[in-house]
Length: 114
Image (tube, rainbow, N blue to C red; front, side):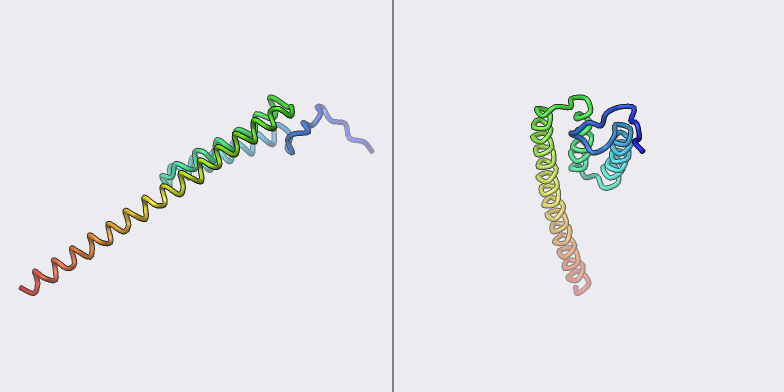
């Protein structure tokens, strides 16, 4: 038995438009929650990379495949770079806080000895 389709499936995207939009909405909600919860800006670039895939439904041609590949590479590369920079900043802040705590403990010990 042959099943009739109302519209042809775009050969450049694996999901039908409705499923793709639902996927992107769920991904956007998850990434917005992660941005809010973890205060990590790299999730913004990851969210944009996921949502950019919807462009293939609007422009279903091989030129858009190349444009989207470049966009995805730049967005995900930026997300990785931002995540690494933020991680280094957090580690530096943690090291400074630990050093300040050790200094405070040493001063408290000296004050109690006198």
